[in-house]
Amino acid sequence: MLSADAENLQLIKKLITAIVNRDFAGVTDCFSGDVILHVPGNTLVSGTFKGVNDVMSALGHVAQMSGESLKIRLHDAIANDQHGIVMYEVSATHSSGEIAYSHIDVYHFRDGHICEIRGYPSDIAAFDRLYG
Image 1 (cartoon, helix red, strand yellow):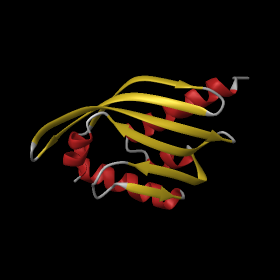
Image 2 (cartoon, rainbow, N blue to C red; image 1 turned 120 degrees about the horizontal axis):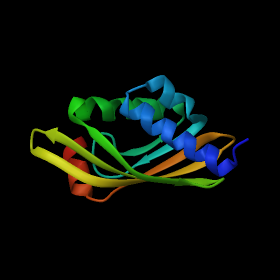
Image 3 (spheres, rainbow, N blue to C red; image 1 turned 90 degrees about the horizontal axis):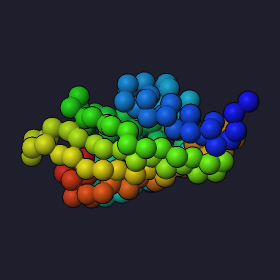
Image 4 (cartoon, rainbow, N blue to C red; image 1 turned 180 degrees about the vertical axis):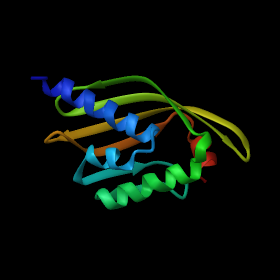
């Protein structure tokens, strides 16, 4: 049996893989029913989203707005029994040119699911251009 730390790390990696593969059912499986997503910035996808339906709607808009050019390269992921951190690189082709920045997500876990996510892009101006 895996420790809670190892299980939560696997959960994070499952989520990232599902997002990269646009496997929305896989993404949904990672969340608690009352999941909360905090998206920074001043964009059409910024705000606080509560519940699986609202979070999945927000993630769907992110996927739609970033298009097929979005690339996510996982840098590192760590987790313990309560929290996780994922560091990754984002790049995409946009009408304003190539956009790239580093991103950190902080996760909170409860009962084997992700119950809260806070995103922190390293370059908020680039993030806003991509999703503005």
